[in-house]
Structures are given as structure tokens and as C-alpha cells.
Image (cartoon, rainbow, N blue to C red):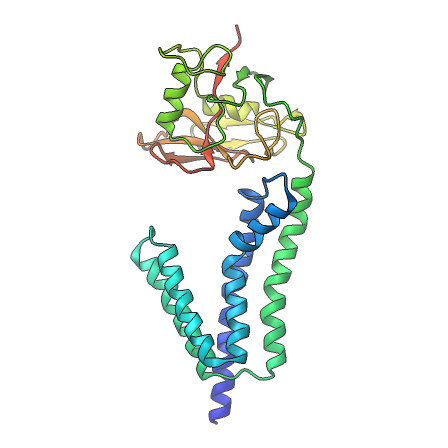
Length: 302
């Protein structure tokens, strides 16, 4: 009877490990090709995939394998992982942090008290299930990323969109490769020189942030306009063809995946609309300043 209980406890631990590692494998593989995979170096991209986006997947798998072989070290390492998760999500609500640390420690206890049999199948499932998820997501998304259009022209661009034509700022202060808040973006636009390359001492009022409607209508895929339209009533953008992180509007080798727009959110004046490279429109607090949130200034064509 005792052996049967140990087997059940062990397989519960294996199941929870597979559940956790699979969740992080799913999240990590998608995020890797959403906000990651921007470097010109394949080795840097792979490093970020393994040690940033798949970090928790790798940790759960390794700890499970160690726990199956050595019970005490496995328990200690699960406790340390729980503490690491508690610290890693320090900016989150306390309830979420408790929900992270508690099951991780309990998982270590399940391995310590349990003994899944046959053990070889425990090893196989712990390794293979998250690996299959990673490959199933990464292969098609990796192929999609490899097909992105990049003409290498990061100068001032005249983009003729869907019933809108604008000049988009060149790489520089009006198109920075670093995070900016909404107000910072507005201020930079005000002082930007005619050619978009220099910050002037006095306000010029030449450049500005694009409206949601303008940027939606300007989005493109493989050099062709995406046929986007924006509905203020539903706060949704729709496209004939889904856009991507491509020139002339985007730099596929930049960390930036969101552009601020000029429009304040309808339901909350503390937020503004922000555009992601695949065409989605969301609201963010105007004070938000993440490395992947920036802007590209525009000006009207006379």
C-alpha cells in the first residue's frame, strides 16, 4: 500500500512538472518570436531563446530530472526555485507570488515523498512533452520570421497608405531604438528638425505622433499595404492582410515592437493607444516606459 501511494504521489509530481514546463514552453516559444528573435546573430537569438524565454521550462525539467535521481537535492532546489519565482515577480500582486512559490515547494515534496514507476517513462514524458510544444510553435513561427521583408532603408520614408500619405522620420531622435513614454515621444516630436535628424533648442511643431487611424492605414506586409481600417467605436483594427515587423515602418532587428500613437484612450485619459507590429491596437498608461515601447514620428506631405 505504501509503495502504491509513493507511485501515485510521484506521478502527480510528474504531471504537475509537465503542466508547468508545458505552460512556460508555450509562452516562451511564442514570446521569443513576438518580442525576441531580433538580433542579426543567430547565436544571440538562440541564447535569448534558451536562457530568457525558455528559462522556467528548462528549470522545471532539470529539477524534475534531478529529483527523480536525488530526492534531497531535488527538494532543496525546488524550494530555491520557488523563492526565485517569488523575487522574479516582485512587481506583481502578492497573491500571484504566493501562487507561484507554494506549488513549486509542494512539487518538490511530491518528488521527495513519491516514486513514479516505471521511472523511465517519467523521464521520457518530462523531457518530450515540452520539447514537442517548443518545436511545434517555433518551427512555423521561425519560418514566418525568416520571410520578413527588410530593404535596409532606415532614412526618411514617404509611405503611401490606404487613403493616407505621410513622411516617417529617419532613424534618430524621431525614431529611437529605445523605450520612451508617451509624453517623451510627444516632446521629442515638438523639437525635431525638418529633416528629422536633430533636436532643436526651440519647438518646431513639424513632426508629431501618428493617429491610430493613420498608422493602421499605413501598415504593410511584404511591401504591400495591408488594407487596414480602424473603428473608434469598437476600438478594433481590421486588415485585408495581417501586417508584420517589416520595412518601411518597422525595423525587424530592433527590440521595439510597439509604437505610441497620438490618440488618448476613449475610456481613460491616463492611457494612450499603442500599435504593435502585427497590427493590434491596445491601450497603455502614458507613463509606461518599456524598452520595447517607442515611437516613429510623422509629418504631413505638403
